[in-house]
Amino acid sequence: MSPEVKPDFLINAEGLRIDGRRPDELRPIEFKVGVLKQADGSAYIKQGKTFIIAAVYGPRELHPRHLTLSDRAYLRVVYRMATFSVPDRKKPAPSRREREISMVIANALKPALFLEDFPKAVVDIFIQVIQADGGTRCAAINAASLALADAGVPMKCLVPAVAVGKADGTLIVDLGDQEDKYGEGDVPMAIMPLTDEITLLQQDGSFTREELLEAMQMGIQACKYIHELQKDALMKAYATKAPSEDDDFDDDMETDLGEAEIIGEED
Amino acid sequence: MADVKSGDIVVPGDQLCVIEELMPSYGTYENDGVVYAATFGECKIDMKERVIRVVNPDGSMQIALPVKGDIMMGQVTNAYDQRVEVSIVKRNGEDILNPFIGEVHISNVTRRFIKSMLDVMQPGDIIRAVALNTHEIPVQLSVVGPEFGVVFAKCRKCGDPLILTTHNNMICPRCENRETREVASDYGVMFGLEVRPDLAPRRRHYRRTGGGNSRSYPPRGGRRNDRPRYGSQGRSDSRRGGRRSPRHDRGRR
Image (cartoon, each protein chain N blue to C red):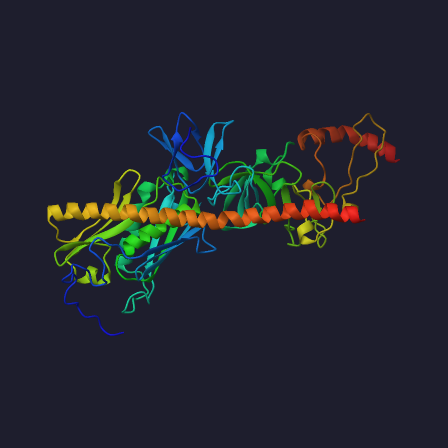
């Protein structure tokens, strides 16, 4: 792969970004729920070129035992980037950054979960970044909250997350990799849309007070849009789960009632 | 009435109704008098109980924890005097992805009296049991009932599978070691073990010489578990035995 070069501008003359988006436009997002067979709950997210799989195991017994909390479940998040997820090969050893992001994601999801219903248990979330193109921590939160819902872990509401940033002096939503690297700063944020509580708010770079407030407003709007997408993904997952079982049941009834009688009469 | 009706698909955070209409149950929570969905699934409204819950299309809970009444299978890992610990691997006939620990207390084994848990289960036994509590770790199990209990056991001395002789009595076909277990009605069926009533511990015939206290058993290798217990063992038995023995001697002569 050719070495990356800094783009001449992040916002062009027409006010569009390097991938042609408007400043307040998200990348196309695709969610899918229930992608892994062995996990209790799973989901993937494709957000532009970013591709992340999240798996939830549990609530289950916590090993090692000394970590158990007697009044609530322990939330263990493991965020990992594949070696091939970035242009330069990432070293496979867990890095400082991965540990930090794991903790940040756990803290972002914790307020939404009813962990106190499952004392001494653990809820494991494994997040694997297959392909990274900026905004992985926010995409990971989106996927993880869907996987938690798929696992049936009780939660107050889904947790959508998005990054807002600044490039060439313009506030932009949902940063790509280059905007993240060469922009003037970013603000990843996650909210609980039911109560409009903010569960994650970080900042990198410098913003004026007005800029930050406006960025947060943009982020909340984007999060609410992502929340709708998350709900759709769950509905779709339920639709694929429900009808197949009904069909089987109907078939059995028909064969039993119809054919048995006909055979009896012929004899 | 409520914002949703039975069969509606809801996602976490959806408003369902107010607390005055329906009580929150599985998969729901209440905040400030309003009931919300806590999991995603189908709404089920029970107007008799006035309860709302969010469940799967087949009425089960999505969460990976046992609910009351689930039939669990597992292996006994530790046996103590009062309880045994079970490593559960199957729930309602399906392998569970995250094995977890269950517990059988001595009070949930049978309706009869048992002196020690070690008389009815041993480490390594495979048991079938029913869960007594919902969404808790460790799960409390019960083996009361004919279909619950040990379905496979191994000899403590040589490790060979034990064969059931008569009710709850076992024999090892290789070393003729006799043990007892609280067995399920289908003991060994899954593992191809037959019931061998002919290997049951033989009793000496009744001798109706004395008034009712003439039951005696042949000495059999000193295995305490071989004989059914009548009353308490030990001191009172030996005292009675002392009185009884002359009469037996007379009878034999």
